[in-house]
Length: 552
Image (cartoon, rainbow, N blue to C red; front, top):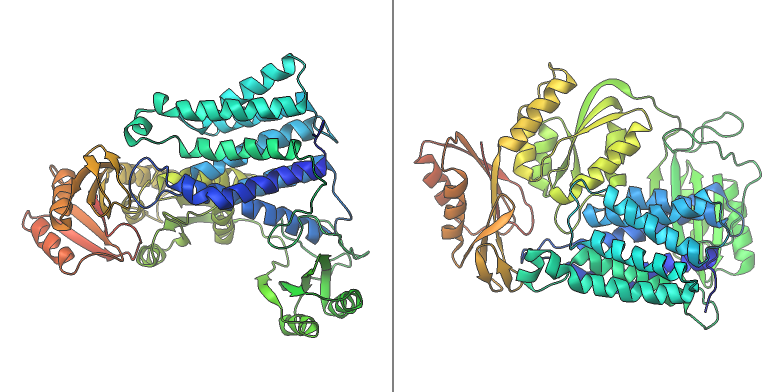
């Protein structure tokens, strides 16, 4: 049993958590309290940690780090990467848990984490997670994290060891998770525990597993190669970076190559690795050829993509080839405003693009990360940006992107659009002749004034505000709540429309999904137009929801 955590064991904690989420993310997704097919809490937590690990490893390779980085350096890098990779509310909260651990380690410049430091880290993570939520709700991951932190602090006050702390923390997390249905009625009605709390339990169980692993330290891998492989470093590689986080010019003032090329090779002998490094060195900069067991990871910045791949082909077939265009100089945000909006389907993306905004793919099952949103904001290149998440579970990631952009000189205004139809209504009132403040106010009002509804199909049995449902039942959603359960999509869709168009409506927008029955849109259009209300039909192509409705 470990008495302290060093850099290697902290890294193992993160990797074991990632592995646990990979195995159980579908189970956590299924804890969604409503029986609609967009439960992705487990998937968002997994993707957040998975991509954070990948980004941390890639950054270390790019900087040419030698050996194992210091604990405080590595956890700080992981914290930044987790925030940029955060997907959905659960991913953002997970990134704040990681941030809390990082703050304790970096703030005290720790080289190892003992029991008192572990208790402080767990408590700081719980505090940061709660701070990240505008309206904290008990019976959620926040409650489970608070209870776990309180128990960890109790063990330390009693002089307990690290092993005693982690065992007690697991028990506390499990008990707190079991109590979540008592604190949140919707969980009790559905007969489930909180999904985010379940993900947090895996986080604490992974820590306990690492602390109590009595066997020899095993070689843990991420994406088939270690998080910190031994790296080569070019003596002339400058580590100076621009404010945007993209390398600028080389040490000699010349612009760096245009592309980053990465790929994997299998079973390259030691002399082959030497020759490969030499060949790539002639083609570009930032050459990193690292090995782990039977895998070789290749990284190079070059203008000649074909030659970089050809150098690898000498030793085998390159796999997982990734080519990324690199910016060659820092850019300063230009005067003006640009729009960035999330789209749950290709048709919605097309409408967003026609409106002059940058579209970011995001919706149930694959929500945009904070990093993806930040990249779109940077791409706009203007001092002012208006960002529309168009999904309530992407709002926190949008806020995180806005905070990161502010540090780079861009002011991002996040509109509170929680659905696609609200986002489209907000885009419709944007006026390039008005000031940013005037547009933000008008767009916020348009989004808030749009009544919204949807039709979907239950993929599991459960309880809803509209009563019990079974697999295959048609569900009517009004203002984000399932209020109608039926068997006929025409009837349910008509009832949803009647609810959101009861008074004072001039325009109804119907966003048509991939699985809408033939003729349904025409029948609904005729029904609404008979009430002298204009109808706009958009072929959204979104999954999960055959119909989305907006009433203005």
